[in-house]
Length: 275
Image 1 (tube, rainbow, N blue to C red):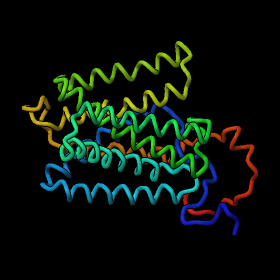
Image 2 (cartoon, rainbow, N blue to C red):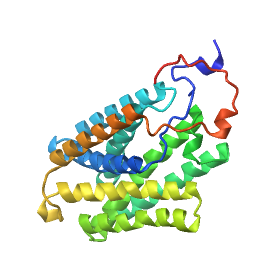
Image 3 (tube, rainbow, N blue to C red):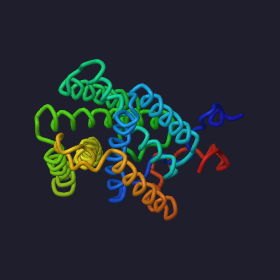
């Protein structure tokens, strides 16, 4: 059997991540909001953080399995894993604060170091951080490690600004909205490197979405609108499912083969596992 077909998780046939469109950013921000609310619902409304952690880890492992069994980008598998990381990453970041007693400033710095380290290892091995280069298994592993670190970092940062700095959830959300505009303006008007602009904006989507999710879900005593974690989680999940269904049907977010990918020898058959 050829080497690319060996193992439980086959080598990709094509790009494993979507093209970056306006709808990508909409869905990304909604997954961060939904993940925050869902994690808080599991942890607070179910009454046991241990049970919540087991549920979140289980969802994450199932989503990880689905994504790595596909051989090219599949909207359902990709966004299922992104959503599960939003949930599980929130739980991990919160656990570090609640159980290990690390202050929000500490977890923010810690996850920033982890994120920088993963970026460095990725660059050292692949010489690219572009999302248009995710067509090998190793690059996909680096990609999802970065995604997990960005979710945990964003959770810690959002809590730091809202709670430790006493800005409140709404003010934090508005602040991160203006921050996320910076890379867009710098890229379009001042020729900021597209990879730098993408990852800058990607990191900020987490505290942006989570801050607004907390604002709508948390009680008035915590500067929230008091709609509840369950309601916010349900609504955002439904919206995400509708948008991902649209992407899966229209396939508007399928990447065109990158030059490096097109130049690879055609040594694989298009009869592998996954869509």
